[in-house]
Amino acid sequence: MGDRLTLSLRAYRYVAFAALALLVLIVFSGAGVRLTGSGLGCPDWPRCGGTFLPELETHVWIEYGNRLLSGVVGVACVAAGVLAFRVRPFRRDLIAPAVVIALGVVAQGLLGAATVLLELHWPVVIAHYLLSMVLLLGGALLVWRVVRDPDAPRPAGDRWVALGTRALVIYGGVVIVAGTFATAAGPHAGGAGTGDVVDRLDAFGTQTLRTLIHLHGHMATAMGIAAVLLWSFARYRRSGPLLMWHLTAICVLMAVQGTIGLIQYHNALPATIVWVHASLPAVMWVVMVWSWVAAGPVAAAQRAPAAARVA
Image 1 (cartoon, one colour):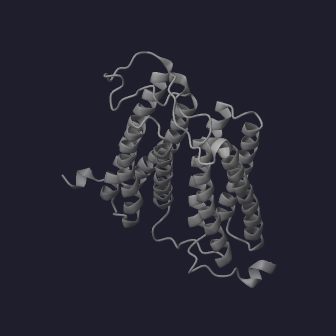
Image 2 (cartoon, rainbow, N blue to C red):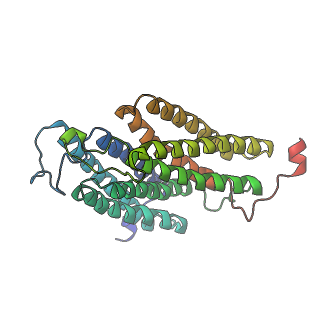
Image 3 (cartoon, rainbow, N blue to C red):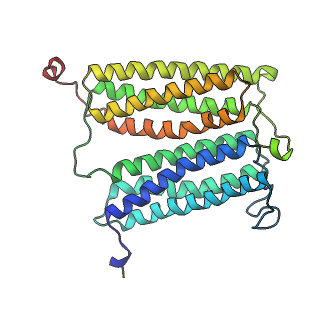
């Protein structure tokens, strides 16, 4: 019986890929709920207006549809967590990220319920979004490990490039956090479509939104410059193609995000543009996590051989 409840690594890869794809998708879906003003389309939880089959109203179904999608995400993540123990041959390196997404998605469901019951209170909404980043971290690592041979040598590159990549990823995480505070002060609270008034972050009075947008924008600009400098340095040091691909993707995504950020700022924060700007960090974060591991361990990373640099 035990042998029949096992699966191959190849089969488990589909589970891991599905979990990561759904974790990215739910960020886009959740942001869509907020930017359409449908956050309180279902003011209670888990039922919607006392039923599991809500009325056919746009904002109700936007919110309820996101809940249904969350259920699919939960099944995929829990399956990834449970089935990681049944992969044969056994892969110990898959267990930690698989357990993170399995337990994290349960916590995310509870936090999502709290978000509704607390009427979209902005600190809870921020926590809800940032927990998604933790889940994406686990999902990205799981996919990275499941596609690599566990006996293959770990990527080994230049020590300073590896340190620079880690610094960029950490700083990128800080920029994402800053972005959530700017959004918390913005006009898209999630209740506009249903006529609900939701408290906004106003730590600096009437200048809160302007202050936080400028802070986030300057931080993001610094990150974009740092990403280009790191890309140039990694190219000079002859870093491997895998790391270069990820650093290139970060630079491109930063350029796209910067352009979208300027468009939304100079057009009074239209909901559609804000939705894209708030969702793309999910993709960015996955790529940054992969760049971290592609850079190799700092302790083992050595300077690129002199012969390689002059070849």
